[in-house]
Structures are given as structure tokens and as C-alpha cells.
Length: 581
Image 1 (tube, one colour):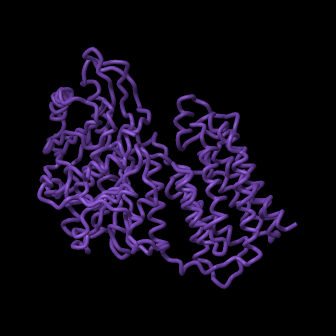
Image 2: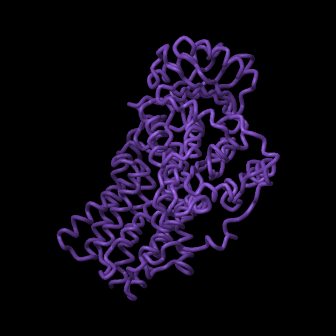
């Protein structure tokens, strides 16, 4: 395939010396001796879907990133790749900051990676900084579960924080600087796309996202850039007030398909208009954060009032593959190294196996195995039904992706799944679901199951496993979804069903009901809430975009992800009941 990420990265390191390429994880890293010589330095890792080059692999090196994790085109890298990249860059006692653009898939997978690294490998000093510099969506209109998107301002953020890390600043100082810049409104980006037909701008979409997310305004055609710039600067001014004494840095980013000729025309319009309201101290122009070959641009303004150190950090000399910040050629550096993570034997451990002390009784192991088998078979049987439900307001593939996870679960029951230790079993299931379901759903299930496993790790090792342990696991899983997916009740997602199940299960336990009755109530509650999603307006994921475009507020079918939870909740109940009788 011409857009094969592994092949592209292999070519990248052939052309650029002084790097390392972990080919089975699609990670670009600084040389090992550089990392070892900077043991006290805060390490910076970024990444995301490919197709945005030179972001993020082009920014690995002295003064910027220590590593970049590259997913497939416009797809977040897996949590497994992120964790393994982290382990190659830093030890458990070192400080590592992940700089992540605010997209759901990236937020979930980097979040899951951090949780796994903490619980499985003992990492103590990990932070995630979410970049949300997009100002096209007004604050009042941004959904919490989506938020403001991350755009090319991320590159300036990496440049400044990379300099701070190289200069020896602490994790607290670097995170404080980055969060303050974003949260106090000192950086803002506005992007737009267009076609050039017969010398005119046509099919203009203002505020369009890097992955095709819909913009905020469309124009069939316009004669020049002036009206677009007025619109963009108006949105930017809502964050960065236009005062004549406001010193700013400007970054104009080519999304990949705009000619240098057209870029020059745009700059001839933009800079005089900026000069009316701002004092421009630096201008960066080029392909900093592309969207394959999309014809379009974005404008980022960075207000220098934030700190008198901003220009010092931006001017800090770098040694990276991209020449956009004046990096020196890599000809004199050693050739880049290519290796596989799986070949590094010292890293092939399962982490903290000593935490898996709480065990199922021998009779319970058979029950667990049969219940999981019933869940897997039920999800496979309902593959097409879930696809039908998903076609109403989605891609029509929920059943297929869930079935992939079910197939892998059934296979693991015949081989490697640990049904003795609940914590380890749930961690294994987390990785299975994340890798086989894929996408946002896979990441959410991965987060949910991993957080659930921690509840068993923290339980009293001498206690007998009971229904209250499963309630704690369910509660932990739901909290993880809310923390990283930013999903709220009523958003028409699987969280609505899981939280209703949690609440009803808690109530049943408080009334001292028998275990079977508690499980029956949990299944009933999940089914009830899944049905209720028919009357909910989607506020998260692709369904939210589809609903916004159609204007629909009610649906013939329930949310497919929510209904999948109801299916496995009922299968759990039926399987458990069979084992009792």
C-alpha cells in the first residue's frame, strides 16, 4: 500500500541519521546514548495518527521530542505501542510528559497507556498535556465529550516545552507552563480548507478539522482570502484580544496541498491585516502539521505576554529531522538504527505479577470460563443486529468490531487467559479488546477493563471474591471512562448503560439480596437503559456529527454500543444462572 506507515517510517530513518526506529511499534526515538546521558531530564513523548507529517516523527531530537508514536493514517496509536515506547525512553522513576492533541482516540489510548504503565510497570511520574488550541468552535458550543480540537499550535507547544526540558526544568514547571498557555487563552489556531478552481476559491469550509471533522461555516466560493481572514481573526480575537501592544508569534501551517504560490498570496493578505491589531515578532510558515494533501491552511497566534521566556524557548537550537525550526542537517550523525521491541529480551516481562494475589476458588474458575464463553457466543450471534443499529447513525460496523473482540476472547479462553487471578484476567481482556476491537470502542473497553482490574489489585488479599468486588470493579471502570473519554450521562453511549447497571447493583447489594438476584438486577438495568438511548441525542463520537447534520432527536434503534453492553450483561446473567442450576 502506498500509505503504509511502516514503509514510510523506514524511508524516513534511511534519509535521516541519528534516530532509532522501533519498527514493530512504529515509534521514532532519540539515540539511546542521548537518553542515557539525560537521565534527570524530563522526557517528552507525543504522537497520534499518521498523515500529519512532519508531525510528530519529524520533531524527535534535541530540543523537542524524545520519542513519537505513530498510528495508522488518521488513527490513534495503540496503548500497547505507547507503553512500549515509554519503556524504551525512560525508567519507572523518571518523569515523562505526553503532549497529546485533543482527539477522542488519542485521549483514550494515551490515557490507557498511562494507567497501564503505572499499574503494571510501576511508573510514578507520568503526565498528559492535552493541546486544544482550536478556536473555531466557541467555548459555549464545545461539547465536553469532544472539547476543542488540537491543531498546529501543538508544534509551538512542543518547541517551547522541549526547550524547557533540555534546559533542565522540572516536570511541575513544564506542565504548569503548558497548561497555563492553553487554559489562559494565550494561544489560538483557526483552520480552513478550500479548492482553487478557475483562479477562484471554492468549496471553502471554515473551522474544518484535520481529519475531515465538519467546520463551522461553508462558502461555495469567494474572490480572495480577505473575508476568510476577517472570520479567522475574529475567532482568534475572542481568545487573544487585539491590542496594538500585543506582541505575537504567527505560525501559518500548510495542510499539505496548498502551493507555495497560493501560500504567498495568503501571506500578502494576512500580515498587513494582523499589523492593524498586533505587533508580529516572529513568522513561521510551512508544512508543520499537515492533513495528507488537503488544500487548506491554519493560522496560529501565540501571545508573548504570557511569559518573557517564550522567544528564548522558540529560538532554542534543535537537532531534528524537520528543518522548519532551523535544525542542522544530520549528515554527520551515526546512521539511524532499526530494531524490534519484541527482540529486546530485557523488556519481555509482564510487569507486576506480584500484585495478582486475589484468586478465584477452583469451582469459580469453571464458572468464569463458561460465563465468558456465553458472553463471546452471544456477541457473535448478534453481530448483524448491532451493525443494523449502527447504520442508523454511524458506520454500520459496531457488530463487526465487537465480534472481533468476542472471537479473540473465545480464543484466549482456550489458550492464555488467566481465570485464576481476576486482576490479571481483566488486564489480559483489556489488551485483547483494545487490540482486536480497535478504534474508540476498543480503547474505551481497554480503559474500562484495566481500571476494573485495579479494583481487584487493591482488594484485601485474604477476602473471598464476592459480588461487592465486582461492584468496585464496575465503579472503577466507569470512572475511567468518564475521566478520559469525558463522556457524561445522557450522551447516548455505553456509559449510560454501565452507570445504570452500577447504581442498581449497588442498591441490590445494600438490600442484602442474594448474588444471583444482584446479577439479574444488573442485567435488567442495563437492558432498560439501553432501550432508553433511543430517545437520547448523541453527544459523543461519530453519531454526534450524524445527528447534528440530520437534526434528529429520536431513533428507531438504541445506541449500538449501549445495546452491546446490554447483550453481554444478559449473557453474563444467563451463563451464571446455568452454572448454579
